[in-house]
Length: 122
Image (cartoon, one colour):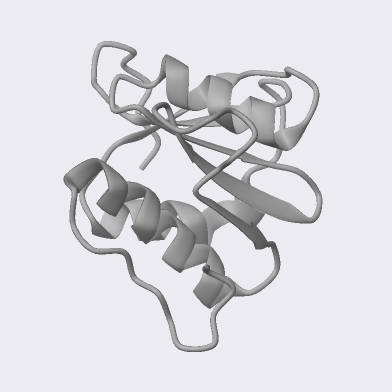
């Protein structure tokens, strides 16, 4: 569920504009929701996807940010170097997208990441 109350701490998903279609990110949102962490949407356009994810993490009260483009999704944490995101995965695989959402929420909770065997997570 996307949080609209800016006072509630949440993972921030950077979007290029307010009108972007997020329907193909349902698996990502479901992974976050399963871990019971709020997620909010924020228009952030810093240039590249990694910078957008980093800016999202800086703007998140939970210090976790996500960004996406046509081919990939990036998970960033505010204490990492800007050009060194935690995870970058290709879009398209529902299982991987759900796992990315789960791992974003687990980063907030401080619980072990879900790393599927043979997955894209490294």
